Image (cartoon, rainbow, N blue to C red; front, side, top):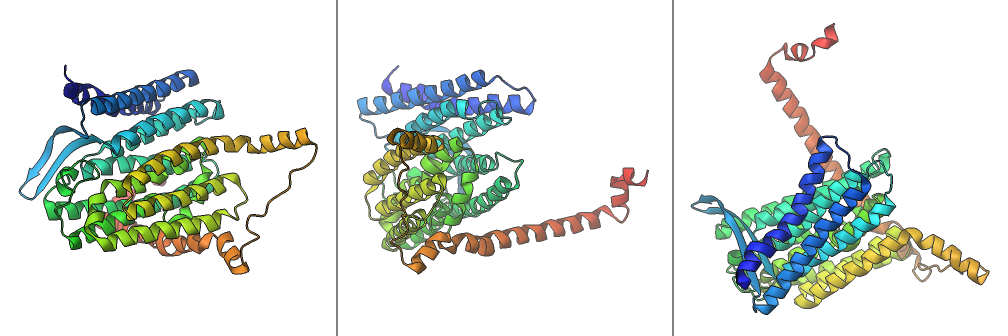
Length: 449
């Protein structure tokens, strides 16, 4: 068996199957009402993550040994029309392989940490089901070779993120905040879906190799014109802004801290919050084609970084402060992408994800560490007012988190909810009219007994 066969027949399928099989097993047993012991769930999660991690490292080593920068694995063409082609394809290159390695590494670390952190928690198995779904979504999105495959992983990540924000569902605040996150994700997903439709309309397919150029990342040259690149790129930038909490969608990020600390670490400190930046890295040939798009990306990244720094300077809880610290670095990564520093942005993304995961995991024991230090030195540590240097207006702006949360509620969440409630009412009226005048009484006979 040669190197190419090892990559396409062994390593690539293992990278995809490891998290998918884990989710299928845990999800299937959960649906059938069969709880598993905590130790067994932990071993399954660690085993799947380790297998995927080793397969990803082996793929990287084989690519380096074979001097290959682009390995494609296709699973056939599912739809073939004159102006529309839908195929399932995965690509391993200098962008996807490092992110896949990072996903397996951090998800395995979080799984090991959560075993003790959520010990005897009623939703222990549910957490690992959603974590496995998230790991599968991140891996699929990382190695996606078509926009449809990317959208699939994108949806898995969004669904697991929203459900883990509402993990403590017995309290109203997590469910309410998860709903806010879900609304923003829905709008972001709609923008990505429109970008996919535009790509199909302009090129006839969503294959990144053809739509964004056939060269290895990041050297591809898109066949689209500057105007078409601006249109498609703007939709993708909108999708990335919603997923990575860039301005003006930054208001939902501190609300997402309602979830357990392990999910906050892997989602909003390490992987999920960087998925928008990864999307911009993947479609970087579109940025090279349009100067206006590059300026928009750079400006949005810098504005997000400044906003996150100001808002984070006045936070009083550790998780909110870390979330805004993560957002400030994500803004800088997006700005680096806009000015053309693609490899720098990738290295920045990988390093920041690892650092922020460690900080989030250390957050629960921070107060205990401070108490131990104060007991050791025999006096209280001096408090530092990080926002004292701000002017009154800047301090109020930062304390209110730029009023983006209120604007998000008024301009995005409320119209979204009202629109779909109106659609629900119209659907009920239409169904009642089709069913006839006696349908309600026939459907609820118990009310008359």
